[in-house]
Length: 501
Image 1 (cartoon, rainbow, N blue to C red):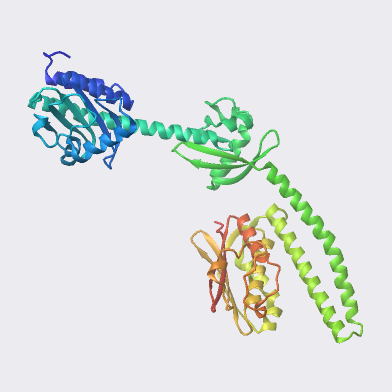
Image 2 (spheres, rainbow, N blue to C red):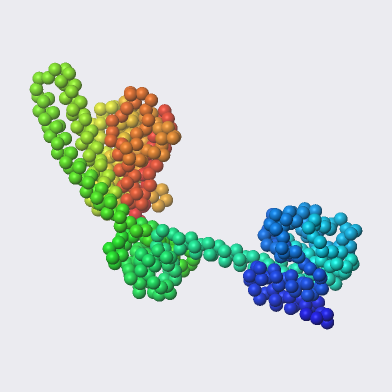
């Protein structure tokens, strides 16, 4: 730029230069260089500020300052100097003679002479995002022409700096996200349409996917994965579909829609878990079978002894044997049921009506209700269609009603309600028992959990697995369970299953 260049031409050249890059450091350097050339200032500094008026980037007239000195100087000029004044008033200012203007702060370590100063704010959308300061060793050097030119440059620089800052921020966030995705301990894929556009390192290694930009079906295992994705999308779900890779490994597939046409696909290798679960199932079934037979024999011999003439103590001992053997058999049966449910064994999903299943199951409790003098109140709305195994639904009802009968004192009532709400079928079983403390409610569906009691009189016999079985069945059918209880009033246990449409 020459002295014959008009201000309009200068601003046009500045605009071209500033829009040529989105690199923040490069943009800041260009702003300073162009401003120095246009105004003939001796030196200049440029500060970039965040919304809290903190300096985030800077190019200083004296670049070789220690970090400690730099921090002190920046605090000083923003608190008591011209930079702070410009930030507060959001307008440019000229100091004709630094010796006569209190807004000028001479930094202790600055040995260069500054007699006149021009300061201009960079304002973007009403916020000061930068401060441009020009120095000259002569007093009264800067005039209104310099002010107009500096303001014009600052207006363009504010936009360029904001664009560069946003670009740098997006680039940094993208790099951080890329590093995060690459460091995940499970295979991760990004699919747009039918094209694989990204895979992380572990996907490349473990799935042997060497390149992106290819059709998913052309990748080894891609057809099985595409089928799993179609199954997930058709069911409106994000997770839970299992697929087998060509080498025999089993993955649980999860998806997340990140753009209109893009899917993030996570594959969790559950091969070892499936093997361990199978081993657990076999172990429990074997142990349960080996225990069930001798316990059945014990109960059989105990029944034979009932026909014998026994002392009072002998009769008490025999009753204890029968009670303990009955408890062990119930525990084994509950364990087997829970293992089968968790393993997905033995259930046949079909359309059925929860209200009908309840109506068929409840008569089996007549004797238990009569023994304690309990009233059974039913509110069974029909139809209540769900997709499930009727036997599994019977297990839910049996466990919840048995639980209610156990904890309801003589003369109380048990209420069984089946209804519809939104897209769910709801089962509620209520009792008029002693209620459950709030702290214990979150643990009720855990295996073997028993609510703490304050006296032996509160003890109720049970295996501690009934509610776990209810939750396992609800989980199997994408349902949910909950409890509502008030101490001294009673409890309501609920199970919600998806409504079959």
